[in-house]
Length: 250
Image (tube, rainbow, N blue to C red; front, side, top):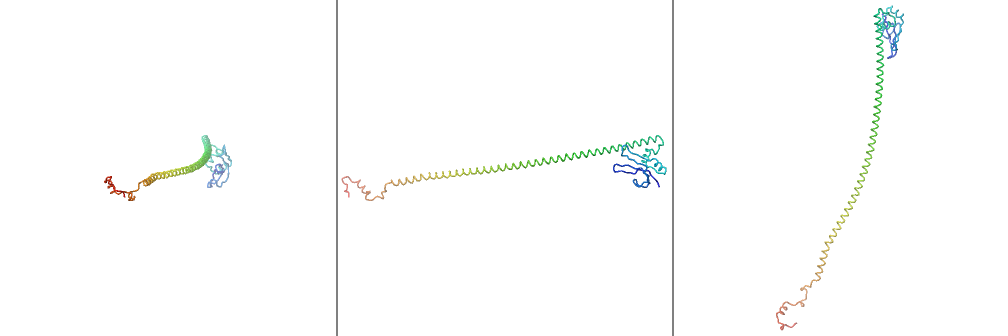
């Protein structure tokens, strides 16, 4: 049965820490383990690394093989002695690079969090400003609509008053025109009567004059008595006879 020295993940989401355990190679990462020889927390500043060197050396002596990550941690903890100065320098540089990478990752994560917070703040401010502008626009539109309604009502009232005044004036004008037309008609009718009377007056005068002439004319000879009208023959005879020979009057 092969044994491995590896990390077992612990802690909550985005805040992990690890146990350095001895487990069978067939077990999953967070599965059953045989023993614990230390723990590692990369989230602290500085990071935390504690290893029981005696237990680590004992399990290594029994054939337990550390993973690359655990080997690096055990070297940092002093379990493995560097075989040469070059290896020591390489290990130091590797550790420094790992530490710098983790620091950069942490800084990037913090910067991303700050940027996300700033973006959320800007979005909230923009949303609030948009809401304020929308409310102001709605209020202004409502005010304009009310003012327009009042103006329309006032215009309608004025128009109604003007229509009423025009109707009244038209009625008055119609009455005046009707009265004037009646007066003109009466005057025209009176003028016709006067002309008729003037035309009838000469006719009456002519009739009266004719009657008067008829009264003054002499009585017609045809109507006079025969004894009073001398006969034509007698007149002729009287004219022809001499004065001494006039016959005696009967």
